[in-house]
Image (cartoon, rainbow, N blue to C red; front, top):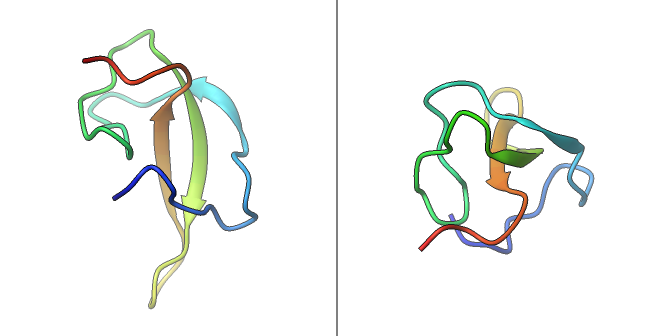
Length: 61
């Protein structure tokens, strides 16, 4: 995925802590336990939307 992924409504839903095992949709690095993230959804061709998480600040190097 790229950093310009559009969410279902075009905006991020809210800021939260991601569930264990999630990866940032921008940098694909694992999200640490207390990293604040943005939550969004992307549509799929078949089936319900998929929830994605992205680092709230800059992605770690």
